[in-house]
Amino acid sequence: MKRIVNIIGAGLAGCEAAYQLSKKGILVNLYEVKRLRRNSVQNLDSFAELVCSNSLRSDDIKNAVGTLKEEMRNLDSLIIRAAEANKLPAGGSLAVDRDNFSNFITKQIEEDPNITIINEEVTKIDTSLPTIIASGPLTTSSLQDEIQKIIGKDYFYFYDAVAPIVKKESINMKIAFKKNRYEKGETQDYINCPMNEEQYNLFYQELINAQVAESHLENDKKLKYFEGCMPIEAMAKRGYKTMLFGPLKPAGLRNFDGTNNFGVVQLRQDNAKDDLYNLVGFQTNLKWPEQKRVFQLIPGLEKAEFVRYGVMHLNNFINAPKIINHHLQMKICENIFFAGQITGVEGYVESAATGIIAARNMTNFLTDRPMVKMPNTTVIGGLINYIITTSSQNFQPMKANWSVVASLPLNLAKSRKEDKKQSYSQRAIQDIKKILNNF
Ligand SMILES: Cc1cc2nc3c(=O)[nH]c(=O)nc-3n(C[C@H](O)[C@H](O)[C@H](O)COP(=O)(O)OP(=O)(O)OC[C@H]3O[C@@H](n4cnc5c(N)ncnc54)[C@H](O)[C@@H]3O)c2cc1C
Image 1 (cartoon, protein in one colour):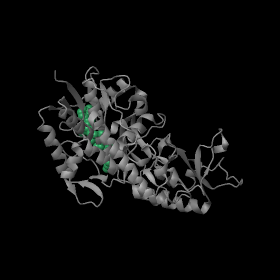
Image 2 (spheres, protein in one colour):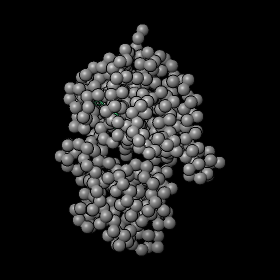
Image 3 (cartoon, protein in one colour):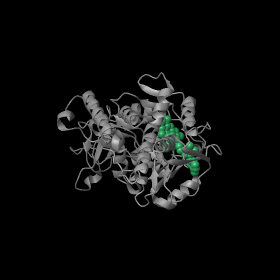
Image 4 (cartoon, helix red, strand yellow):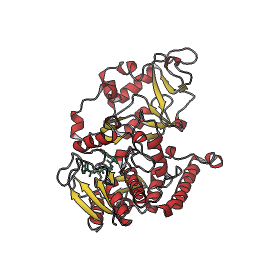
């Protein structure tokens, strides 16, 4: 008997998943709303539209997203094949002609006899039917309501105000110090970057004059910021001292020699491995190069390596640690899988990659074969592991980076930084090849 899977959304993840299921002989009903009604960032009727940048970022395997692409090539990714066929010169990055890229994928999907395209807005989900929800960061509001009914209201997020994350090893601990405010608690959980008045003045001036990113969405411009997640630059513009009563409050954070600071930036642990820290209260709409330039003025962060920059735009994602397992399958409803940005990964490549994993595991689920947990030594495995095991309380989307991947064995971990990246990459690609037979 032919099995059928419903996929909601013909974006990067949905198209990738449809292609992967079809290859295994599974029939797909692919639902897409954009030909009836586009959202405010869509410009094309074709599928897998890149709504913003036309770059799929680095193609260098020493970079985690470069290795992720190589893993996807091994898994026969339609999205990566389409990108390579429509590549534009962009140095070490994989940039594409966005129209040709989207047309290439649409043609593949439209000509596939196993895939039926249904130009419809999905507003109801029948949980007795195998379904992959890949409706993306801008899921329509009726479907948002429906997903909330299935997963629980508290586990679905609408608005994304994300603070940057830096690698712990790149923080200068000769300047920064570990301490909790008023020394509360038994452990010292926060890393504190102290500022004197002169340093604060410079930071303040650069921050209020830094370039802000264009809003991607008309709606964003209308959205009033919640007081609790106001961009740091907007807060600074309210007045010279406003930040000193907010995220940069120095009270309770004296230096160990008892002296006071003018302002203190706090960083909080972001992952269980304890190698990533987020800048507390630093959600921001600054352009990414501006974030690097201005936030590196913070004493202790001069050489900070940013694994994620802050963003502020509408974004729907589920609380993955609560809702899904390693196979991207809902914990409480085994017919439902999630793929794409809605799972809490961030980025074009990451979204497409989860489409492959959801589809391959859905295939195994429907054919009574064991599902596959991607090894944490691979970038896709590390990323999935991050989204499902990180703290559900402060869950925020994550892009590919080496910190989410399992540490290297001690003998390799001590090698030079560039050699380490090479080792991470080689191990990831070897390990992806090992699981190909099960997929
Ligand atoms: C404004 C914005 C800009 C971004 N810019 C970048 C960037 O520059 N680089 C980057 O790497 N990442 C970027 N991202 C993040 C993310 O990588 C992309 O959004 C990516 O397209 C996500 O892939 P996806 O398959 O999860 O969702 P999408 O590609 O958005 O696909 C989801 C599809 O589902 C459809 N859909 C929604 N609701 C329904 C429904 N009820 N019924 C049927 N169909 C439905 C949508 O029309 C859409 O076609 C951006 C995100 C946003 C919101």
